[in-house]
Image (cartoon, rainbow, N blue to C red; front, side):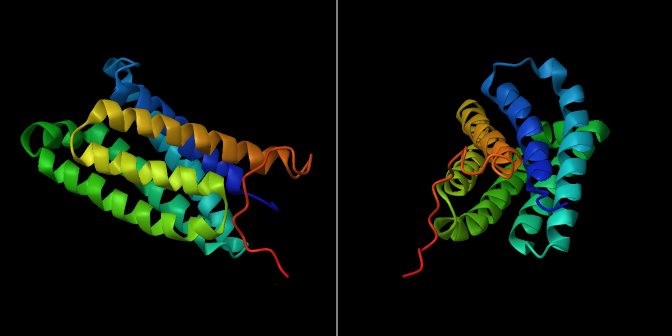
Length: 181
């Protein structure tokens, strides 16, 4: 596969969008079990496949991002299915907050190089970083809205990787790369 990035981006955007709707209060929390299944089977699986394939073509930045967020979704699903996540949210919410803050740190580290790549990635990792900080502070409605916006940017970037190879320059990403003189 020449460009496996769309696989990982769809795996990122789908469960994040559904979780965002739950955090923001637009989707019922009663659907959490199914959402965790999406996080495990769709998020984790697609992101691991996308990460492995991008690693094979030498794109360690994208592979790292896919493996990190794929692991986030896998951990979320495992914690939810085993009951450890709900128990921690009730008895030790600071542990979950630290997890969100660490994800914010990783997202910020991945954000830094985006300033030399494209506007789409700047938006995605910028929104994601802020979303994790806000979630760590316990402001779930705003965190959910930020995650929803992040997912929408993720869907757009996935579409770029599917459409632009077949129809060049159809969807712009706002390149930030320095042009050769």
